[in-house]
Image 1 (cartoon, each protein chain N blue to C red):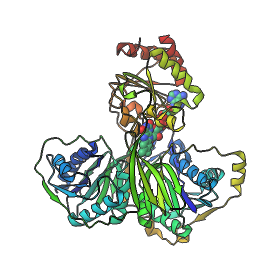
Image 2 (tube, rainbow over the protein chains, first blue to last red; image 1 turned 120 degrees about the vertical axis):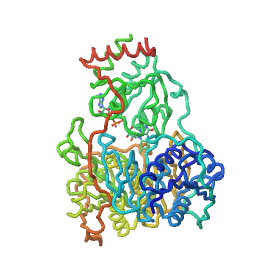
Image 3 (spheres, protein in one colour; image 1 turned 30 degrees about the vertical axis):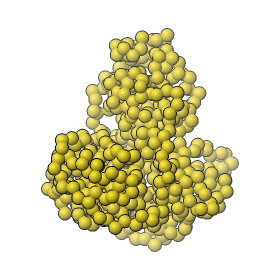
Image 4 (tube, each protein chain N blue to C red; image 1 turned 180 degrees about the horizontal axis):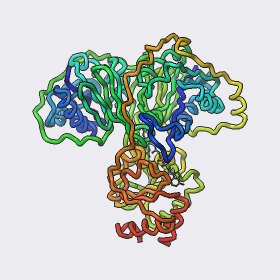
Length: 316
Length: 263
Ligand SMILES: Cc1cc2nc3c(=O)[nH]c(=O)nc-3n(C[C@H](O)[C@H](O)[C@H](O)COP(=O)(O)OP(=O)(O)OC[C@H]3O[C@@H](n4cnc5c(N)ncnc54)[C@H](O)[C@@H]3O)c2cc1C
């Protein structure tokens, strides 16, 4: 009971990045617990996925061929059955939208303590997980009781496992009830439209610090004066002030401009997921402790309503 | 149909704050309705206004102070509220998902709703897990991160969109009874009107202890213990421009020119 079981994630025929990050996180943990790293992949092209997941450090891969796409009922049953069979010490799942759609159910069924959105962990006779609270303003360490655990990991916190491995691949025959109470009927792409912010070289992005829709023209003036592309954090889109195709982040677009100027944006993890690849990040924020400053290259601690008019003047 | 909405009062940390032990000092905290729950309340109230729901009840795990926040949900149109608290809940720094599941399960079983709406996550501890855990415990169906909901009364099915990463939505049909975790942007939460605020004063908030909902202190034994809290280390060497607005803007403009993105 010192093994680690990591559950891969795929969507529409492709393994998602977090699957390979889970392998690195899982290996690190298995080294600490002194066990093997087992990987599960459920549904879709399990053989193809298993070949791809066979990276250095993986000891065994278990495929469960049931369903094409993610369905939480099937995942929960498959993982529960595998857990019963392997009796691992730690069950690792992604803290993705789909991870959050089955991991809590699995933890509940198996009566495992659950720590979500881990950014680090350490096993030393017991598990300690590092997580953030209050919109990333503070970090905490949390001791998890008991001797078996369920943990979901934050994306992009561990490197993706790369070199090819020699894991043992086998099919796991889980007895799965496919008469599920929820049925996936399709997918829809959102956020198309006039501008593709992912192509932009200079992005001026605005967050809740703007306070009111009436203040948007101020930012539009800056965008015009600097010939930038306008983007935003999620609340601006939720409020209907800008269309969905302007949203940067986990559920929006990933952008990689030369300069990303974040104005009145706190830097919540789901926002950062979309912009941390920018060459230069510049933040304007009244809060010196805003998490955006932790990833910014340049910053102004100040009120956007003072700074932006001055900046416009610089370029007019 | 009856809709139960979980409503959490969350703490927000002030711009400047100090950590005292494993907590942010109380004087740096401000309490408010959890952002995601605000959208869940709105969705429930709209279900009532549009017909399918007869009653909207909120449930909160929180001390007496949280009644201020609960009144906000009542002012927005919820009919009544249940608030669970007990001295035993004062102890742990961090309530784990299992504890919240146990408490909410007891209330759901008493209230017997057809639909439970929760926020995707709470802005303070951000576990993002209670809704799905609760559904599993109850034997209800569920859907996480729902950003569109269309209830079909004939089939007793919720047609939902689940917002996945990268601008993709999953279309899913979920049989009731169900728990849905609600994502921001699903609707436009209303402001509480003056009339609503007045009416909320006479709406019922029933406080319940662990004993009242058939539980004892064992139900709140948390598996998670906060052992330290600190400010995250900066990943970058941020260069903060100092000076007044015109000076800082001047330095910022210089960087933009240097990087070749603006002239
Ligand atoms: C599943 C999921 C997916 C999500 N996907 C996304 C996503 O794709 N993109 C996204 O952005 N978010 C996403 N979020 C939401 C995210 O968690 C945050 O809520 C959001 O990013 C916060 O936006 P913000 O920084 O604009 O607002 P806030 O966090 O409210 O920050 C506003 C900032 O403005 C500053 N400010 C206020 N007034 C001024 C002023 N006058 N001058 C200067 N600064 C000022 C404040 O100090 C604060 O730091 C998602 C959440 C979940 C749960």
